Length: 482
Image (tube, rainbow, N blue to C red; front, top):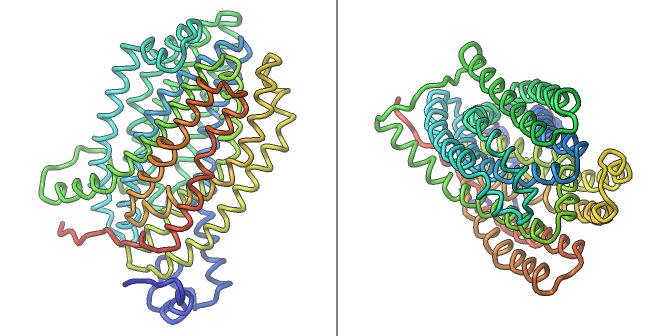
């Protein structure tokens, strides 16, 4: 059914009794009742997802802040080494999003058996990528660090961290996919609880390494912090396995080789490859931007390390609204309820705008406190002050773009728009301009940082226009005879 923008609300009022989905079946056409029900469904997803994102961002912040106590070089080195983990997480996000698309829509049909097959297929892909990153990070850490900086001290410290933390990749690959499938089945609380437990474990082990066992010993402290991350990830995977055995409808086992799995594997690849490419293009752009910063000055690297942590903490609810909204939209589309998907998406967009503004304002509010927590030299501190102002405007565009491009479009099977958008905006416009600013025109570091963060501003009008066309509304499920 083709849905036209001009009469969507009238169509909704006429057909709402026929097209209800899940908890929204009882809605009688009242906007107030619809909003209350949608808010309840959304909050039950957004709060746990946002909390988990907060935990993940806080875990990175803990590593950076605690190692910053040792010295600025150690903090900068670990921050740069974390870019390898960040690139790996892009693969996890692509794979998990692909699994989430199928899971959410089949969850709308209450087809748990197909979801089990999707999870098994996805786990194999995720584990394979994890093994590749483990081998490279363990065997060639110095080479990877040289791609990010030419500072010998940062390369030395970063290689120590990277070689050790690589052991966490295997566990992380499996647990992240399991969390994604549970979220798409509207069970986001488990992942939030496990992430919080692992965070406290990580913090405790970090504190022991930095303040008790290895004070004043940078190399051993870095090694200890990396081992703490490995332990936390292994505990996380263990909790997932126990939860799967005792409480979950989704189990850990190898996928079969029958016709149904071949069909689902084709569907998974069809929607995952464009999303994976999009994450790689976007994340690769961020990594190149970080590399540009790393080759400008060590002081700018240190300031960027802190600014990135603050920004990631500020936008946790923005990421939550994106993920939660994608689950609900996918669920509605799985039952061909396009009217509900449109109405819900409009409300979610409003929330994304509000949360983006709140995130930006929160950065400006806590800005004076950041200097009290982290010790930087005067040059790095001046860079950080300017970067936080830039992060404030970045949050608004990021919140809306992630909700539309990273949430609605993939949930509706429109996985290619984000890919082309990032190719044009990041790789054809922003990164070449940033390169010229850094190495040809030698602009001030803050102006360079402004240019690097223009991508979300450029993408915003493109995302809104594409959203308003409603071409992303698709039901991608198939009737599978089990």
